[in-house]
Image: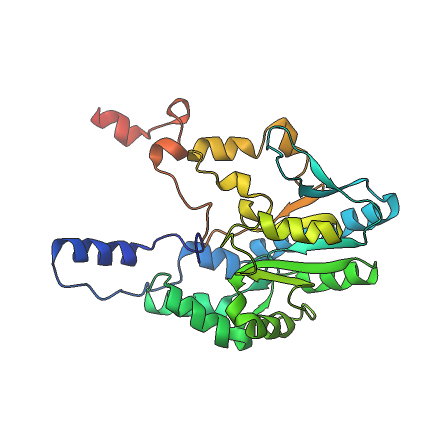
Length: 290
């Protein structure tokens, strides 16, 4: 699945070994889960943050239902991040649109296996998880209650995920097992393979927005809101795109982001990307050496 996982240190070592002809090292499992997994799957802070997002989203949707907005929160074809336009609502029924993995559902069992073995992401392993992992998933804290409340408000809950259309029945079971309700493929569940755009979601979003007035979207990756965020910009430019005036007002007001420090499009960038030259500092020991 494109963009699902940052390359692990073990995977990098394997690649290096293959390129030099040396024997491939066996991945070594860490003594403890990686820091990102400790945070997302174990910490009270992550649970509180997710619950906070879902409570804000639910309140926003309740207000939007009463106000009956003119436009949805899905960007229209031809829109740009610095000049956004949105799909009109007309008299279409309300919906809220959600990514699945690490947005409404935690893949705790899959991440346990990765932490225990030290193996990085591989497509075959993820496919096996999609098919058989329904017993080891759970809701993102607050998601199950929020989705139930949205349905009580008369808002249709729609899932748009990069899980494979070939595994649709297993994904439906996993969503149900996580306490997130039922999903119907092609109606309230859209998957990679439903169109010719692969992991890009704009085509599926357009299909959904043609049927519904989408009044809220949530995801853990920027591509859950628009493929324009993944157009190959340098890391600093991609970050800046989220805070420009035309987009900044959408966060918490139609677009809602869930934390995910474990994998995905956020986990990239070298020192020059992450630490601008004018924001660097060295401790006393480093200064003494110079």
